[in-house]
Length: 593
Ligand code: ADP
Image (cartoon, rainbow, N blue to C red):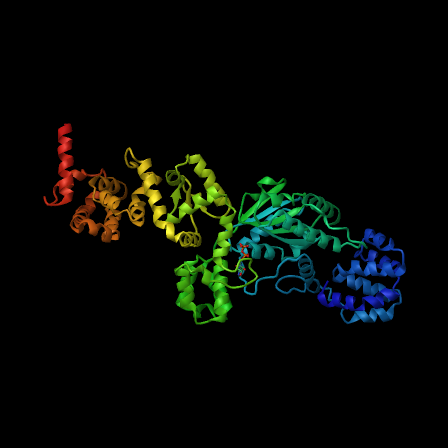
């Protein structure tokens, strides 16, 4: 029912209650099809005329515009002319437009249902994500006839809650699938006692809506609350939707395993494994595309998209379009419109604590939002996750590399990675075989920032584990883990500050031969340039000799079959370390015959 009509009924309630005889009016309303006989019985079960009038008004207030009009007409027909006059000015339009009377694409009926159910409003700055929204709505339509679960999952701040609330802001969806209401419950990371309080408040809300005189006492335990909810949902709100926002653990979820319709948002995609019934899920991408993210910034600072400064593009790129980060920065820029450069620098320097804004979001700053995900891992897995701080941005690793790093069986590693993926702490590229795993830039930034003082040690661990795993000989084939090691081993050694290991690796013709065979010469040359400063402390001439050898023979090293590298090296000047090692190897070969 439109707000105007509801308000009029509420204002006139006392007068109406004093005068009307509900039983007369209800006959008309039943024949108009706006009242059921069950509702009539409930009203008539009240002992006095006045109580019956009050009960009818209570039922009416939860109905739509048609019911208001039918009630008005009934008053006219039953000669309550004065009372009808009270309602006349606020009679709603009954065209389809009137019934829908949309604001933001939502009818007043839906607006009422959503606000009664505690569904949060749109954020002040909002951009639509139509493809995702359609996916969630499609899954919700599947709950039209059967009970079940729809999981919206993704990493911290990816916009899951905003999306869930937006999905139900839809007139047809509510009318066709959830006419008995939509109830939002913020679950979050909570202890059992807190969960009970939340369940109690949900019971209270559902019981409020009933035309009963006395509200029962709140349930005393989670089990009791679960039973109470089961009963309420089954008997009173069979076609209602429960939205559980930000659920972290399966024990909380099991408290709602009561055979009803549930939409839940979580970072943990496998949460519904522990509950029964039909299950569907929608992954939420961690970032918005560039245009949408820029749109958020533009809306915050009240500017046109094309007039945004260059730094706006850099901010979006830096955080990969994270809705949370873009909105946090947008909200800050609204107050300090000249700080584009400053916030970009903070983001680049990973000063997440500075990107802080008190808002309706549960976490004030990005670091808190990220940290919350880590806190739910057990100690052992948190330590393993910390090891990922040594990964490079945008680099994907196969599980086998981590099996070396963690010294665990491949299957065990895959299980751990699966848990990280499920908790939206890690991403998996399933388009490649074997699967490749990678961190979102923000997660990596957060990890490196959090473990800043231990980074050298962590890189050292990679090197040690590599040396132990390949003690009998380096990786030989060009399979994915071999590629990883040839590409990143020097980097890990350098970052661990192990200069001696770096010299002995990079001033070795064997390393050059193996790496060139797998990756060609360009990467190798790049290694000598990148780590030039460290290598030069040992011997800048030798570094140049290796670099020159590679530059001169680059084209040969790309050829297949791979040329005899020792032969090539023998053509180097005799004073060169490359020549010295080649000569040794040639002699060895000769002695072996
Ligand atoms: P999650 O539930 O995934 O942690 P939220 O849905 O709470 O993330 O979104 C985090 C913040 O990102 C919100 O407070 C809001 O400011 C911003 N945000 C998310 N989605 C949108 C959107 N579609 N338009 C504008 N801002 C959004």
